[in-house]
Image (cartoon, rainbow, N blue to C red):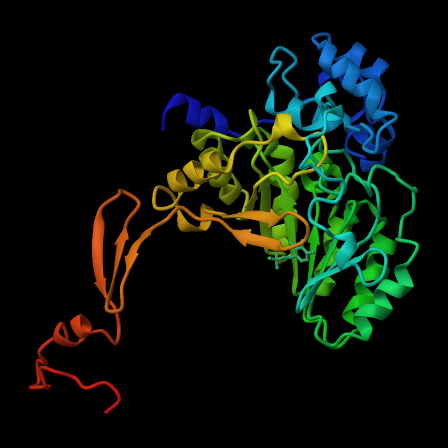
Length: 404
Ligand SMILES: *Cc1c(COP(=O)(O)O)cnc(C)c1O
């Protein structure tokens, strides 16, 4: 392991940064963290002496725009104040560029609203639904694909159409998988979340539950033993977290993820490919390997959605493919996520892969491996496959006639 790699993969505590005087009890209390979030430009100016004019302007405008600013003190402590391109900083501190909108950028880039049979529910795939639980998150990612809905748009806990959401699932027996997202479902109190999970579990055709959340990363203090004990009643329950850079995987996060894994919850990760955050093979490889060390299986790598004002954070598809090429075969298969583009306008997730199939004929395919070496695979049913059939050790016929 070279130095850079071991530095990226070593676990550190976020520390206390500017909050050295806060008691352990307060710091480790998720409600204290939520109450003390950084939401105003004056706080940023005080806490981040290297705040740039673009960031200052961005933070002022965030108050008036769709997506407000909020950063937990814990996550803020991960920012490297000396580095303008700090990958943590770029994800959560607004920038002036957010106000620039390209022609092809949208407020609902995945066309979720057009696939919404009742408010707060997206039914795009045949057997599963996306259930938008709340409109709040612990912190706001500047590239949020649901910025039209989140950051306390209306400040509700449960979606106001909660009963209609449940009724829709009850009356659609094809829905066997419910994905809770939002907003962040883990911001709900244990009691409210338990109520929701119980109502979903009471529906006989709902086989599988999962939660999409960035709380373990933004607010690991929320992953209490009580929360874990409550969640484990609802198996099979999976959780997908959202991590983009190996520095987000602190000792605090590793412990929180460990508590979830110990509760029998299989963990996946969804990353977004972001310019100057994780758009290079070294960072991404360190991230996916470090995730496995936290018992999290990398699930999806998303091409950044065409959300308004995100051009400065988007990396190219070509870059994404180079990164995938650098992962597959070069590291543990479990560490390799599926790279996808959520098709603009509502086509759903489309897998994007480097090309390993070089030629495909009626009787054979030509493939290459991760090192670029070529191989011919005589395909089943073709001429070549027939005469390549091994001569049987026990006098089996040299030619096998298929179908006999
Ligand atoms: C991503 C997504 C899902 C879940 O997709 P999987 O590939 O099963 O993880 C379901 N509904 C919507 C609308 C989604 O965007």
